Image 1 (cartoon, rainbow, N blue to C red):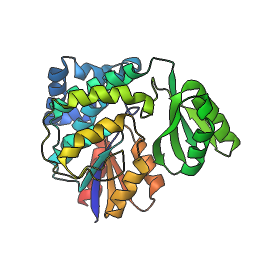
Image 2 (cartoon, helix red, strand yellow; image 1 turned 90 degrees about the vertical axis):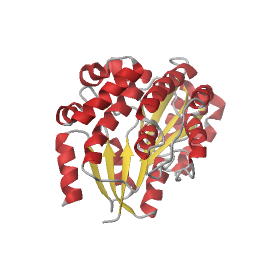
Image 3 (cartoon, rainbow, N blue to C red; image 1 turned 135 degrees about the horizontal axis):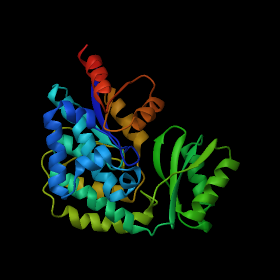
Image 4 (cartoon, rainbow, N blue to C red; image 1 turned 30 degrees about the vertical axis):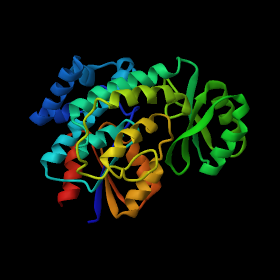
Length: 311
């Protein structure tokens, strides 16, 4: 077997009941929920297991909830003795990757992403910005469309998820016009996303500045496992660059396709998505059909993954 990468989901993967089965069977996983509850002074067990969709969609709830659920799903993998050679996460998931790598303590990370969610929500008033996924158009085509639409307002490519799926974000009218032009130029579909702000666009710069101030208080530890960053698809070279990378990540495009290709280029042939949902698994299969893609979000997926990895 080649190298293994653990990858962690971002906002949008949440659902009520996530990580519940694993908590019921792994006592140390339940301890993670308690740690999150104590750190945030909220009932994280109630939010994860019985929270409403509406509650879980509030960005400052979503981010710590997904990070906590992903850390819970990681626990039995760690207990099984399986280790990754690389780790990465989509947007918010990059923080979970750093928790796994050891850069952040879990407590620091869960507090930080709650604030990150709040800052991102506050950066752009509700209804001013939007996001749309453009399907069936390459990078050059998307960049051309955004350039043609500049006169309508801010619109930028913000998520390079996989071949044929790129998300644009910015001011509502500009995003709508860009989607219209993309369809005229041959895109298969334009799908508006149910989000509350234009995440990863330049409009998020105020959130980046607030996050930078918060990161000053965080003590980083040595990265045990190489972390591949969203902002450039490359391994973060040292702990001294982690904070700067995460600040820029807030208002820069997420280069997920580049990140996966980089890990494959370094010998990764098995990707394990750890946390709620299978969005990243779908992206990875479209990026490289030759790799093995597994996931851990409940007991059945955990059992399947361990069976494949341990033979």
